[in-house]
Image 1 (cartoon, each protein chain N blue to C red):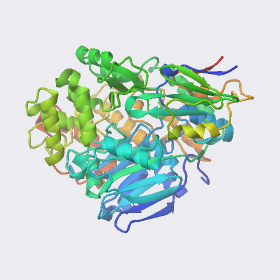
Image 2: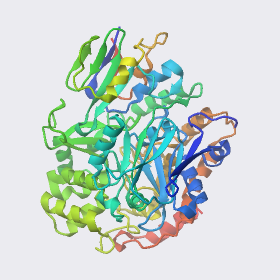
Image 3: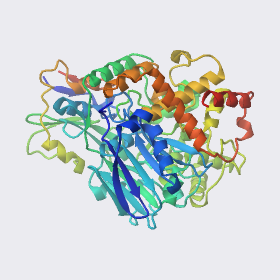
Image 4: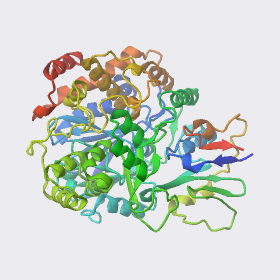
Length: 112
Length: 501
């Protein structure tokens, strides 16, 4: 079972980050989430990254990429560094549905 | 009430004259009295009124799981008409502001040299800004993000028009303009503040059960009037079904964007320097523009396909697009090149709707699409932004249970805006979703704290007070253009004033 991202449905509201963090520490914050929003704002190029146990899911608008440890991430900027330090997604262990899936107003996220 | 969630508990005072910043506690009584948001902004404005303050504030719900809780609010005296003005800050500004660790920021006095205010991690720095003074808003955002090493920093900045302290200036949120129609941009210029940069990585406490309540409300909304609706196209067709403009939007739409936690993605990115179907990140550095200001975009519709590039030019120069478009049209500009020249000129030496005998409310641009007694009346009040459509969007007055008279409709709009500006909910979104009822909001306020005595009566009282106090605090000068005084206007205004007295 893994988190699936339908990037082109995403409207960039960022609530998934906050919902994920809420799972970990019960606060509203983007700081500790396993899912991170990224944006090249002038190009309107945006999506999310998900830290997994042994890889990184890069849900880009044009392609979805799975990056393994040691692999170079294309187009990474300073804002993408913190994802590598984050906790790996555990699909909100103990919950029927992950918080990010419950919170997304556009049904971008699902578990498959 | 002994404790309240959703706030940091800190007010920041930025003294531009001394160059010092100080913190004060956000007292529980302040929230009990006003609820926060624009209502507390106004209290803080009055407290520091002799130092010409700009107050940036957040609502009880800003940056929470409440749907569309993106809102920050700027309160100041508008140089256009000397009236108190509340400007809604959408996109990520309000959220980023609150998560810097400051709930309210009071900027007083004037700096001798150009500065920027950099807020992050509970810290506030006033920094020299000679490196970006003279740059346009896009260059300023790029430069600050590079300086601080983070692409997700949110920036409020001014361009040439603000630096020149002109009435047509607008403050810009990142690259995309804002809902500032009352010249906050000129006030930034007057204070020598080029920009406010924000990065919020703080955390807010959440009351037990609050998340589930918010998620259920979001579900009700997305299954209600908003179901399947998104984008500029939807808003335009809901307000004024002009086929040509809709076709233009359709043919250039890249993706629709939402502000923080909003189910209605009302901002549309249009591409005109590469195909709108291009989803990859290409070498085209500036492929288009995010249309955040429907009023400005529609006002440039006389340019057809070039409406969006003209809007982009306004954003870069920090010009209020509706006034700029009306002035360019009145100057008989018919193409992008001549409009661009006029915009450059406006940002250099200014322009006035009043002096050009164009429609205005106390020199402020009116909503450009449709005029009726109710829409004219609400804008004549002048307390809230004319960038927000003065009527329901997607939904109808009936959906909101509003009686069928112009004054009832106007009163509903003013109250709905007041409610949104106080609680920190997007004032555009709140015109779309009757599911977000006052009763639901009372439940959410009660859940945010141990505040059992809070009720609908208190909510409605605070909502009315913001309007009446904002009007009382204003000595608005100027007049309303005759073309906007539709039949029954004076009686409607008197009736409305009596409802908020």
